[in-house]
Length: 97
Image 1 (spheres, rainbow, N blue to C red):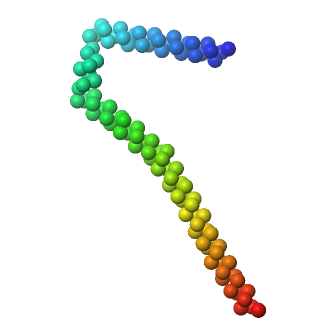
Image 2 (image 1 turned 180 degrees about the vertical axis):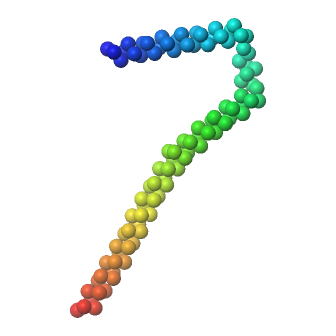
Image 3 (image 1 turned 135 degrees about the horizontal axis):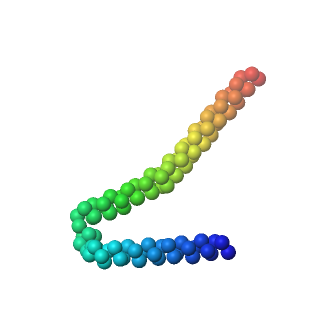
């Protein structure tokens, strides 16, 4: 029940915030189309989008594959070392006989 009240409160605050922003835009006669088409806004939005995808790549995709490749190579190396060690142990056992 409390969760519904919190969600309702959030919607009310968000709604009032949007209405407040619209009133500010109307009062100060801000031309949104002009702002969106400005070169500085285009540079900023391009920077944020590029930064978002770089972070997504580095933190999620790249780190996942680096970790998996590290684990795979570690397992392969350990398997190879164990195989060589087993071969050496077998040869030593044969030499003792």
